[in-house]
Image (tube, rainbow, N blue to C red; front, side):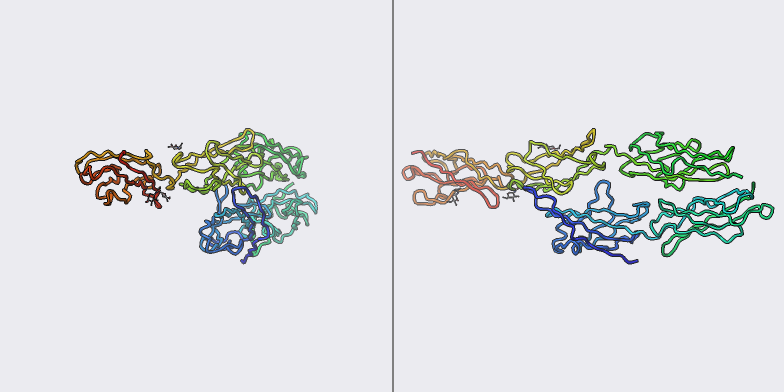
Length: 551
Ligand SMILES: *[C@@H]1O[C@H](CO)[C@@H](O)[C@H](O)[C@H]1NC(C)=O
Ligand SMILES: *[C@@H]1O[C@H](CO)[C@@H](O)[C@H](O)[C@H]1NC(C)=O
Ligand SMILES: *[C@@H]1O[C@H](CO)[C@@H](O)[C@H](O)[C@H]1NC(C)=O
């Protein structure tokens, strides 16, 4: 089966331009894809459909965002941008009986941050056959029944939608009955046996007729059941429900045994012919785990956990059957009301860690996403960071925030931050959660060594020994590791017409100045030399200081 892909590039909208965040433009991509495609099948390409630069694609980390309750059905090939099927797409599981089945996935790109919604319209294929609830439908019909009497037959159920669901019924040729197919006002069809020729018990006590339901798919699928008619003597009234459709609503998490509604059908017949029994007709396992109906009173109660985040509405058919098998049915629709039972969840989507201390104020250092599974105000989130750190959150698209710096960082003052992100929903009472982001500040060689004194004095005694200490200089540098490691050296110069280094030396690590030889005081009364303290950064920073003999 072929399929069409039609990217909708026209739908582009500008969501917000904030002082520090870059412009973010997002557009929807729409595809129409048949259910049950093989994993790995390609149905689109974000490079073509959004118009991206393929050489920068992997740097933009394209991915399908699937945190929280959203399942990932497709994936992006980061090399060429192909959108491929990543998980089984079963329309019946995803959308049940919904006519239009839309799968929403979110594509996230970074540098700059962009969010695109990928809408996948899942087309039904005819992969389910019509099915009858029972493999035999029993009737007991009096031989006195008049020509034209109608007997409603169980409806066949087909999990597919549209043309792929039940379209027609047929019965085997027989002496007594024709089949009339009735379309229900709310969709769906059922068959009725119509008595064409009166029964004669003496001639035939039982009839067996094959009933076939067909759908409109291609290829067509069918389901069958057997109609078994016992001919006897008169139960002439089917039960009648007080309403064709019952509606009710119930809050999620309601306790077991909460009464949802009571359905009621009356039967004009007497005795066993008027005793009505209620039961569900063709309901999913999910529904039967959540609701029960009392066969005698028609009271529908909760029998299991109800989660609004899983299902927002239940629809079920309830049948009433009298003692001799005459049946009618009604529809029950139960709306589930949301309760604020999910706290927001905070996701750190990306983080630059460590951050260099020289970044300018307003730089984005992280991307944060918050989600809440509840609906409406119960799912609306306010998000903030604590005030005492130079960071703030700038709202970006949807529930995304940029974490940006609000001032200059200085590793020598604060070398790391614990930034607490708090998220609170607007439910009543509100629920909140928080997450701590640890951020280290990386060193930049931004401090030169600084001498403790403005200048130093050296005292020389006559006939000093070679190697004796004249004085000692110290410079401090608060930077990290090699950026803060100080190395001392003598600057070139002259003493007494000879080079400084023939008289003095400095220990590069300690800053202690030694005499290289003994001085002749007559020749050498005073001197002035310069010492440099340099750090080991790249490029290095330095300061100079003077050492003088007092005059
Ligand atoms: C941040 O938290 C960690 C772990 O709790 C702790 O070791 C560290 O000292 C904290 N740092 C600051 C700056 O509070
Ligand atoms: C020293 O500073 C430079 C930039 O000036 C930086 O690249 C380097 O990582 C720093 N070294 C250390 C050990 O932090
Ligand atoms: C110290 O002196 C040296 C040599 O004259 C020079 O290269 C260097 O730039 C000076 N440093 C400072 C901080 O003045």
